[in-house]
Each structure stands twice: as structure tokens, then as C-alpha cells.
Image (cartoon, rainbow over all chains, first blue to last red; front, side):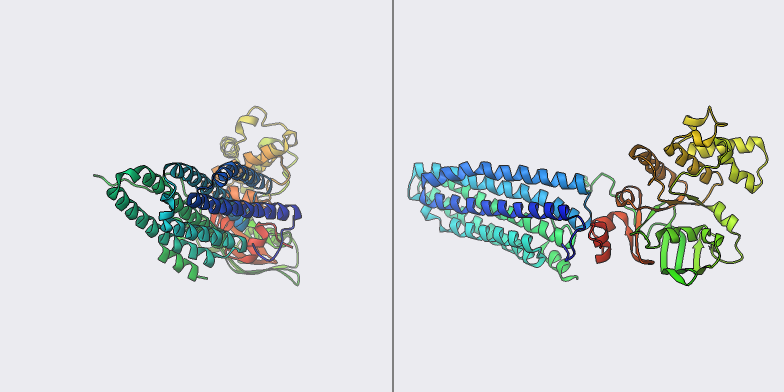
Length: 236
Length: 272
């Protein structure tokens, strides 16, 4: 983390490579989510298929990065910030992989929804909006990971509550539709799954941001209120 | 309905520096090899029944510091201590000119890097300190030697050949014999100066196991070059550099979240 480099150049290189791979994986996830939401809106069958196919690449990244972490632990017995970085990476990739699963889930739901009714998905700008927030959160979490910026990471935590609010509003809208016209129930329920998937992506982005704070500050901020986290970050 | 405790049930090492009892305390300790000031205003508390590890690069003064505790430096002319090391509960200053270094060494025993048994039998090696102390009774000597050898986890291996020459033992056994020799005089503190650097991984593991076991009875101060060893065996760790104490704290904290940048650089291998 610091300005000084490791005496072992190989260790330095291995850590850098692993860090870069996490960012590459993050980039892939971002693309997967964007494509999945686009497919949900447009019903583009080719795009849907592409998202589903790409999930194997996401899984490949997870396994490879976790393997690299085990190797770093056994070979280098890292301590302090190096140890925190490796522990955090191992957790971050799990969250990224789950975000990938959510993207795949959205693509699958998009397929079914468009088989039922072509117009339905477009009625939910709130989902699109929530997904934009989720993608922004992910991007910011990855940014703060790349720059090891705890303050930037803390902002991600704040945004998670926006997504939760939007999820609730989507739910309310869907309930109204279902009451008005019971024929929409099947499609509406599937849309709930999409909204839920977006909400979960926000949660995972938040977890990534929490790990960044752990790497930088050495403080475990999981299950901590935002006010406490802000107080912790203010302490220098 | 009764409340269910969600606290983790595994051992999270509740040890902290507040609940631990001080056994020895260096206060503004300075040490000079002639005109060279090897230790600079060192303040450090060693806690009772805990293992304290001293780490740092070569030449940082960790061995010099350890040797102050049993007055080893007295053996060479030109060496000079300044200020004090207090030993509790009696609050004696170990470095006071009126304090007999032989008496100090009975209370604080040293185990060295390389096993250095005397060219005598296994029995005589352990009995040596007791004889120096004036113990003459054969019966008492035998009991003490057995206790010390058991304490050093060596008894079962040597009980049938106590009259063999100590040099016939393996390296790991010789080191445990030296620990038994150190234990024979019932010391309050055991000082280890890189006790496993000449041993293979198995012998090292058995010495580390022994250290963890011994701390129930004695307080331990250990100098080690092996940071993983410090992390494995110690409760507290002190990082020294150029004769100064840079950071002292609970081992778990120091190795996961050191407070000082210099400590961080050293334990992550960025030192240079």
C-alpha cells in the first residue's frame, strides 16, 4: 500500500497481478450487469444469450483469483496491509461472482418476461434507474479499490439506501398492476425478481466498499452504522 | 424467552495490556558499548505469564536488550547501563550495582541461539546450576533434575540414559536440555535468544510448543528473526530499530494493523 516497494520484486509483481485481475473481473461484471439490464428492457435474445454464456468467464476469474490468494498466503505469509489486502480480495471476488450470478438471473428473467409480454419491461423505468445506481456503486467501489481510497468507498455505503428505496417503489407499482389486471401477475412476479437482483447487486457493491475500508484502515466496518463508519474515517 | 448470546464462542484472545500484570519493566534504559549507544531510552513492560517477542533487523539492539535482563554485559569491560530494569513483585532494579549478577541469573535464565550443553552428562548439565547454588543432597538434585527435564519435555527421551554425554543428543534435544538447565533454578523469566535458528522445522515446532506450555509457569522474553515465529508464539511483540523501541503491542494487532509505518514496512518485507 505504501510508497515503499517490497524487497521481493516477485511478491510485488504477484500482488499487482492479483489486484489487476480483480479490477478486470470487476470490469467484466459491470459489462454483464449493463448488458443484462439492456436485455431486460429490449428483450434482445442475442444479448440475453451472451450474458448467460459470459457467466462462465466470471466464474473462471473467481477461481483463478482465489487460487492466487492461497498461493500468496502460503508462499509469502503476508502481514499487515498485505494480509488485509489478500483477505479482502478473497472476499471481494465472492461478492463480484455473486453480482455476476445476479446479472445472469436478470438475463434469464428478461427472456421469460419477453416471452409473456413484449411491452411489460419498458414500464419500469424505476428498475432501470436503480440499476444505474447499482452500476455506479460498483464502479465507485472498484475505483476506491484501485486507488485504495477509504473515503470514496464510504460514499458507496450511503448510496445503498437509495437502491433499497427504489426497490420498494418498484414493488408498490407492481402490486398496483397486479391488482388492476391479474393477467400481468406472471410477468410482474418475474419483474420482482429482476428488481430484487438489482437490489442485491447494490448490496454486493456495498460489501466490496466495506472491504476497501478494511484494507486501507484495518477496521472491519461490516454490520456497522454509517454514522459510526464516518466517525471512524474522520479519525486519522 | 431467554436471550441467545450471539457472541463468538471461539477464543478471540481477550488478553489486553490492561489486565496483564507487569513482571519486569525497562525504564528509559540506555546501554553503551564503550562510547556507542546501543539502546536509546527504551521503555518496555514485560507481562507476567505472557510471551513477549522482540523483533527487528540485525543490529537493532534486540539481543543487546535481552542480555541487559540477566546482566550478561557485565562480563565485558567498557559496557555501561543507564537507568533501570525493575523486576516485580519485589521491585528490584536488576541493574543496580549492589545487585549480584549471579543472583539475577538465577531469577532470569537465558537460552541461546545454538544449543550449548556443557561437556558433561545429561544429568550434570541440568544439576549444574543447582550445585552452584549449593544444593548437595543427591535426592533433592535427582528430583529437581527430573522436574526440569519434564518441564522441558525431554524426560521421556532421556530418563534411561541420564549419564550419557549431552553431546550425544540431537540438536533439538540439546536445545531442550539447555531449557531444562535454565528451568532447574526455578527462574521467574526465561530469556530466549533466537532459540530455534539452528534447528529443523520439527525441532522448532516442539520448542515453540514448549514455549506456549512454559508460559503457564514462567514469563518469557524471546528474540527472534523469524516474524512468523513471533506471530505464532507471542502475546506481545516489540519492534525495535537502531536501538529504539518503535512499536509495542498485542501480537495480533501488531501483525494485522500496526500503528507505525516503520513497523508496517518491516513486517511486510518493505524494509530497505
